[in-house]
Image (cartoon, rainbow, N blue to C red; front, side):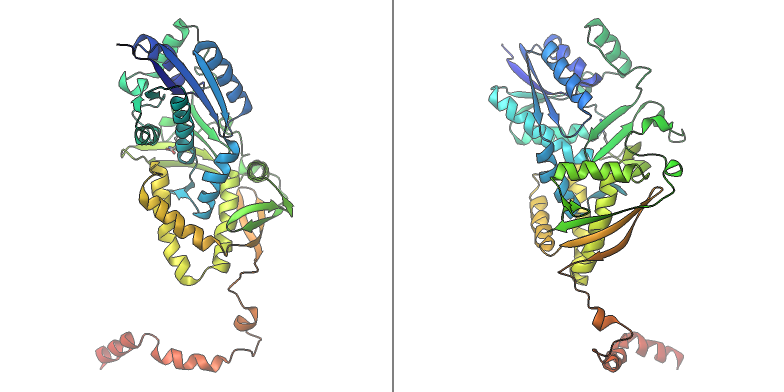
Length: 395
Ligand code: ARG
């Protein structure tokens, strides 16, 4: 039976590169189509994926999804203060989009199967598979199914004359989009190993950052950052500018032990300067404009949202419901936040909003506009049951 066409989500890295010949030799597909989805990886990565795809696959597509990624995935994540076990979500946000774009190419090519280069150890396999299966297509995961090791893959690539840049020069697995850079594998798998400075690309070591604080103002509309220092920018430009400015001040690094979906603990290193700065600013502004009730409830919503986003379950109906709640709350998240970036830290220096639920006049110790005497009545009832119990016990 003819197996026809398979469409491969293609990064140009070792795993996906060896998938091309494997899909022909081991799986018997007649046509292998590669798709590289640009979500803000280094231009050189996209260029090399495009060249490799054109050279080794039967057809290749490169799709610029940078703006779509920022508008449809990064912005909602800011509105949800999206983070997992203490770091801003990154890889997890881009996977569904990469999978969706690949599925669209599969449809256009009348392919019944979509392949990816994920291993059976990580989260990405689950995120890809979920989107592919939801689209009614078959999943092909050669690295997982053939139980391949990196050493075997390097040898196999050599035999097929596919250039790979791993090996000694680049011994880590890096995943990058414009919101987050993740580095794992190799010697980093020893949690006690101190990583060399050379693994970092977006952030300087905090101790080496300039000794002068850098200040900047972020303007939000409906929970979305729209301008830096008064200059309105397209989402992707704003994120990239913020990465530059926060990164040069050493903001946005994590070196941590993470609990993956399967339950495995893994040592992960992340860089996310813009994400750290923008989420700090956004969360601060929320405290100025949302009610105490909204804030308390939204904390739980943000956590659930982040968990589903981490799992890649973007079609889960709960995810849509949480998004609707978050969207409603963001209507009033308008205003500006002044940030100070300094040697690995970001702090809020001031904030203002036309929707502030703050009244300087009411809260001020120097103002007479609210009669503080009225609070006495409240204080008589405050904790009245505990007051009674305490007195009874002492009697
Ligand atoms: N552990 C992170 C996550 O699941 C990062 C995964 C990075 N993927 C990679 N292929 N290097 O979101």
